[in-house]
Image (tube, rainbow, N blue to C red; front, side, top):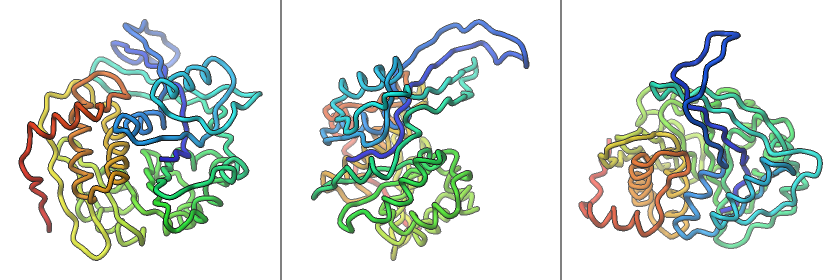
Length: 312
């Protein structure tokens, strides 16, 4: 998997409640770790898929932390660090009710250029992954809009628009959308794009827009919906678990879905595997909690019932 998105550093603060404007509050805990696109890459790499980061990264403490995390996860970094910028960071404030509030400071990851992407050659079996976050930065937006439509026809493109999908330029979406092989998002994001609150209807609508392989819409604990052109949408049930932290479930789902597709699984089978990975991920605290391949296989073996996919 060639990842052309953004790796940042997450600075997580646990607080009893957000302070009033101009106020202050003492955090009860804090953590810092690679985040953003790192979580999807780590999920895919844990399934044995070779993963490379083709995005930009910086020189400084956050860049060092991001690269160390990628090295530990077995992710190859394709470009040298930007000499004059550090990697950006996201401050995630988590209140006692579990609600997350984010503040993002872009850095080197927001400076991707067409020259960077032109230097990355795709080969047989490669899958390119792009995120809508990258299209919110001026330099990345121009680079991705120019590069993605020119990918070799045999190279699948997986696109996750992210929660800010409504802010992506319509011109960029028109340029990229026809080239997308797999559009993967959650139900809220699908509703923003299509206007359909029902995930089945939204997935079918999106499948008619991409023009290539299909669409996956995540529906939380219920699993996901898979829609492919020419056929009805398929509801792929999730796996009931005792969740302790929902953070990172979507990234685990996407990374494992890509890895399963790369291994030759059908879309529905890959979605079922991804549902299992997301279920395991929410039983562990932290953002990059996708399971290793062995743990995921054992989980699926324990639940060897056939996927009861429902077509409508």
